[in-house]
Image (cartoon, rainbow, N blue to C red; front, top):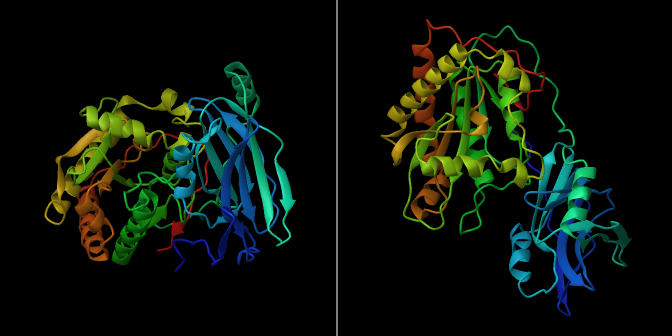
Length: 427
């Protein structure tokens, strides 16, 4: 059986504080050949703000700008980041006392296999100067990225001249198979440079939903009745439109996207909600959630991809209506199985315009497992016992869905553009 995920291997590196500055020891080499980042520092001086990374070895860096919101994106070869994620978020608080600083916050992570990315949220329009690399006496490599304030027009021209949409690396296509078992695509939300919601304890949504997606795939695999495909097999970012293409290219029979919401202003709100796609949201809360989730591409520093252009010309209204009917049917079975084993929200089934639910020919649902802002929900989301109970009930819902469709035909497929599948779970 193939592994479902390849976790980044990490090592321990000591950090020494001296004279108020963070001085890294010589970094340990990465076990997998990737550079290791062990420290990051933001400093503003003489009108220039610098983001400096301490690395185990030199890497090539490429920067470009994006507008609405203002961001600078730094693309790197794969880097093993050994830096606390909260360090990037602290930059925004420091900006209040660091006059003239241009960096509001920054985040980093694996963007695609073999590629890492740093996304810098700018406090105002700024351009990236010449990126410099120097080596310390201890053998560490300092990658210095300077930012200089400019006017709006200059920033806009620089953003247009850049390349905001580099191609995403893809895994090799899945082999053709005569296996006729239903194919289920499980989508762990967020990933890589996009952490998703963040709990008060520092726990990331991307990590919770990835672990849950793996457990769900294992439970389905144990039945022997299904083929499984994960949209991501590790902590890597996958654009929203690409997640849809993966399911469509694989001719999936069901797409399940796993998420966990957060409402810091309302910690009393808790419970799971199942969403199906619709142009019109059930309520304002659903519309706002879909809007937040649909900004995932922007959070990762890439353009937002829409559904393939050929769908609008080929898709028949009947196909879309049939697919949404199947989606609603599966949502109903999920509610029936999940209600006895987990707390559901006040409106357990809602509709909204989530981009990952826009496939015209693959029944799709998005499950918000709970709220990271709720103490009780967070405890359950991190409980192995709770996870096993919930994934078991979800597997029963899948069984009911496909047994009920035994005499029904699959929605007529709309020919999608060619795209590669990612991380198949072997039968």
